[in-house]
Image (cartoon, rainbow, N blue to C red; front, side, top):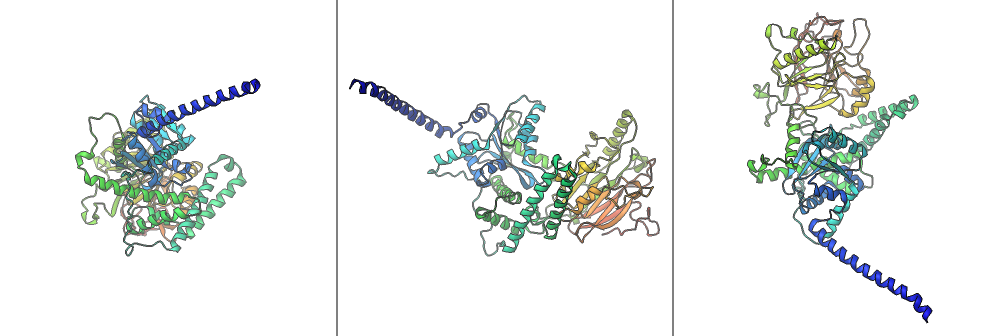
Length: 635
């Protein structure tokens, strides 16, 4: 008996102690639950740090969706994040950064105090985050699991003048917070849904229907684009491109995929997500297709691919845009402005900052606030109802080699127009001091010209970094795309080696209206005085592989002897591209300017190019320039 008691006693003591410990745990859990109801699960240390330091939250939305296996929709994430932000008193401190969207834009939803930024077609959400982390001049918490993005954000903070801290929160931790919040509120009714659940296509009689044929075309295009993206990603890896056999195999596969896309029309996604002025579909049809595609994705068995995300992001952007416009109607202009007395930058000021960037004279988006045609506003008969013009006047010069004053003798100015475009080789050869003086003279000359927007491409004689403070001209040293009046897309390609051009081509669009490059295409307006063709074969092949067809107009320079104009088809397209070599210098080594500027009108509606002025471009057939064929001035 004593032996049994000796054994049982410690067991009873242990059980009693466990019971007390469980009671303590339950009490602690009860206290935590009460606290979580009050502050809704800011449980992770990094989240606690962000709340304590009054940090701004920047959320990589697609990264969060990816960690949920894309089960969470944009709308659901916005709803949950709004609840999470409002119930944790984080209003005006949370921004959602979204990949894709037809416009690089930002919308502020005052109901939840959130800003939603769309990266647009020319950037990724990573680019926006890495660029704007230092903007707030305060501590920042970034929700992402992308190691490369983390490194870029750290570098941006280190380079900034503000000595702030940055922390990274894993999307799984963020999703867990949202799940805990929704579980606690599942029996409560909330009116914080910030996106209208009503569909724009409520009128079934008038609504367009996504036919099975169109759905199959979109689905096949998404799959082909996904395969092309994977192939191009493999091509960017050095281990693949250093082996000739692998390189040829990947290049052949990419070429075949582009051909298949072109044969199948491969531009339905572009036409469904771009602005009506560019797309062949009207806005109503676009909205209906995007809405139905979102419904189809909820029951689809195929995994979500990049093409799906482009369509879903654009539909989400339009929903947010509509909601933002509704909120703007309910508030006066005074209420919608940022309070100047508030020194701390928040999501409202950030939203206005993004939109001011998009509204500048050089943008990387399809914004209607892009480059406007103010310089020729006197042609009011060519203006649309929204104030934008169908015709844009371009004044083009190239290869001036420090002799730009010869284009405007005795204090005259270049012909007026909407955009002044210099296609490169403005610098001179010589020592650094002479080069800098020549660049200063070039900047002063640009400043005197009447054009509102001035764009300068880097040529092979020009330095990589140039400041033009007097003229405020945009110097382009890497491929970039811009929009004119939100309708005419222009792709700018400065001089670059074929290898660098190949690696940077991924930043360029799948189509454009106008292509402006320093180098001409190989074999076209590129014959030197020694008979050799010195054009860029790599750039030409890229244009031939443009999924939505080649540009309507291609402006170039570089080869002085090649000045002229031609019409040439590219790839599988039956449409001919107008190519103009605008070089101003004499043949051979540049010693003088013997040709004037080229002035042309580009009409977006009729897709025509009219050459108004240009030596060697609009001349009689008897005076051909360098054996180039004379081309009519109107195409």
